[in-house]
Length: 428
Image (cartoon, rainbow, N blue to C red):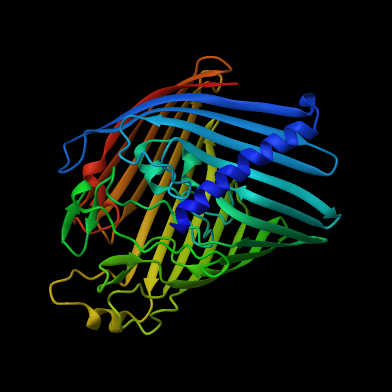
């Protein structure tokens, strides 16, 4: 299949990239860093058609970098063995199998006002803390909910990133020649709500998806125009591509789809009082259903994010966010729904709170991040304790708790996936 060939091609190019450069550059010019990570996680309760063990993983990451006079070269890859993983075949786009190629890129500066980054890279922008409006780059929700490090929420893209600088103004252009979907929840390891069956499902009903895989045809482009003014970071955004999760449904093929999407947005970030304020807006233009009359396709949406962070005491910070999704053409959406199907609220509201405390000379980290939706009546709690025993060795334990009044809401559908995890990491 095309997507599988694309994954193998990315892996082969990454390792070829490394070997060619190693043969051309003295070994002393390279830097090698990485870590070995062992972690295990268990469900807090049994789930139908799922194992109790969510994670039994050994991960070795190697990062090889060269800072030359003409370019920065970087290769970062994880070798993974996970006894709890049902997905054993290598799939670099879904992040399954024995290899996760995180980065394989070259960063060039062909002119004083131009940077070009080519290859596999992790892209991100926007102002939200674990909430995303104008950041339409792929996310790995499975890693996030399983108990992997927060860094693994952001998945890699095969992309070209061009940055142009004019004084205080920067224009970033990211082009992805192939569609980069989120690593969405599909039932192999985490249960989810299946609207066609009307219940939570797991391995008994793996999500069937039409994966867009035509290179240079089903592509994406994202733009950011930014500058700093009076101490505030201001930005405008644009995106042309597809919904990142499979939110459409093709009844003839009985498969989920990625409908067309355009996004327009803006953001602001800067000081306010003793803390830091951020705000972001976006309009999600669902090109396949602008009228809202097709119940099998997502409606267009307005999205809003407001956040504030400040230090409450030494080594103790708190951050609050308010997030809103407002459905466009809501009346048409309600009229299009089949009888008996639970409708979405016109306004989905979400509150988040992050508390971070460092103790023992900043060697002990206590972290709590909570999501709560008063409209969906559901929530999600991420807790973490991380102890740095030495400069190289860290021990950690964490929890992912989901709750909801209804099985069909975003966090409520994941109640059976609540879990505890722990592990150890050695960095080099």
